[in-house]
Amino acid sequence: MIVARWFITLLAITGVIGGLGFIKFTQISEAIAQAALIPEHTETTEAVSPLITPFAPQTQVIGEVVAPEQVELRTEISGRIVKLGFRPGERVAEDQLLVQMDTTEEVAQLAAAEADAKLAVIKFERAKKLRSTGSGSQSTLDNTQALLETAKAQVAQIKSRIQKKTLRAPFAGKTNTSTLSLGQILGPNELITQIVGDTDNIWVDFKLPQTHMELKVGGSVTVIGQGGEQITATIMHRDATISTTTRTRIYRARVEVQQFGMVHGAFVELQVPDALLKDYLSLPVTSVQTDSYGQFVYLLHPDEQEGAYRAERRDVRDLFYLGDTVLVGQGLSPNELVATNGAFKLAPGVLVYLSSPSDTPQQISSANYQ
Image 1 (tube, rainbow, N blue to C red):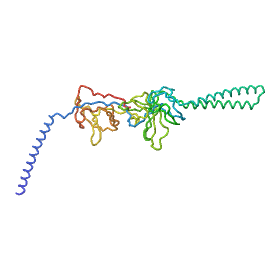
Image 2 (image 1 turned 120 degrees about the vertical axis):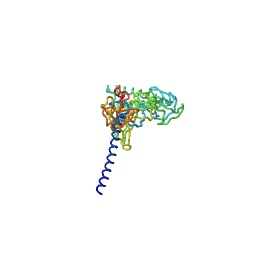
Image 3 (image 1 turned 90 degrees about the horizontal axis):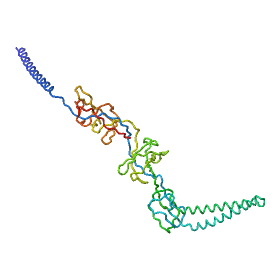
């Protein structure tokens, strides 16, 4: 009796479980059938094929403007100013008289020395003639020759003093502001003015640490003006040694034409190559996404459905952002299709349509970012 009761109970339980299972199976089958009728979720984006773009990473340094022709004019000997041939701060021509100091004493000494030199010439010619005829001695000829050389040296010495008191511009250029006046007494090594020459080019000196890539003579750097203007400068030379105090090497670059108001002694910014030129792939910045795992893009692969693509995540590295363009160094190939505007909506495996299905994916414009 007891066994029969347990058997009946077991059959009832089995029947209930089977019934519930059948009901659940029916519900799931209906849900699957209904889901099959719902279209797959899709997204719409734009896409490009990346372009190969030569690029050299840049670093920014400070440089100093150096005029190719610039000099500080100073007095060599003392004297009183008797004539000023320029106004401080204005431009001067080559060999223009700048300052004439009093040479009255030297002019008088020169006249006397030149008279002595003429007399020495006469005595020497007479002694030489007598010696040729045998009437004069060799010692007399030697003495008159020595006196002649001494007289000539005296004339040259006085002329040199006069020249040192006559200061002229060594080249054309602009003078610095200074204070000079007639009658002013100048001592030795006093500053008259500084002249910066009128040249068709200007130099920029800058320093790079010894760990930086060595730049080649003839290579290019970019000088940035005060207004943000950029001009290409050519490296003229570099120091043969590295400073033992700063561990840097000095480079000098030449700007062919003076621009941006660069004057001698001014500081400017330069962009110099930080690595060798190599090929990168350029993309719009909207292509690159970022999460906790790093930076990535979505590649689009053709799907079985006509005009559709499947999204695939691809990690990218070695990136440089240049305005609206990003350069990718690793992770992509030129012939791949990359999602751009709208890429933030994608996920791996999602079905994607291009915003203009009838158009082929476009390539962004390329530039040489050297």
